[in-house]
Length: 129
Image (cartoon, rainbow, N blue to C red; front, top):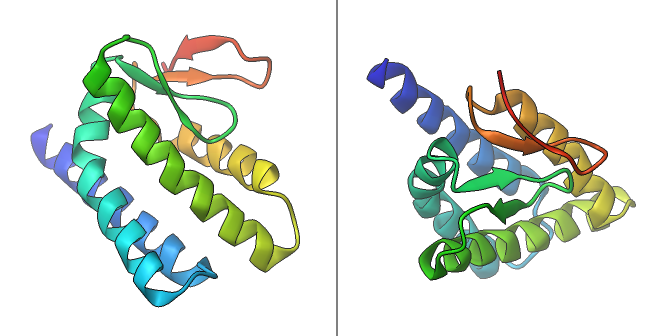
């Protein structure tokens, strides 16, 4: 079970890295900084999601479900980076950051682990079965 968790986390990290590398329309320094930050945060965020402390909303952003300062800071930091990523992808593809986020939310919901919190299109929270 632990091996699967490590493999899933590594696969997600590689996916994020590939996604960011392939679509970023930012200068190299900024791109590398965001990639490093998101990759470094991934294990801690997975723990928060697994504990039910945060969930993935239907706009492609994390949302705090437990109101602690540390959790809120981690979520805000991740969401700020996601916002930059979505804007860069949108600019490159001639769409909106909101649409990119919504599409990413669908993918994140599919990749979520059992019992992690997600938000459906209507804004209702549920745990993945």
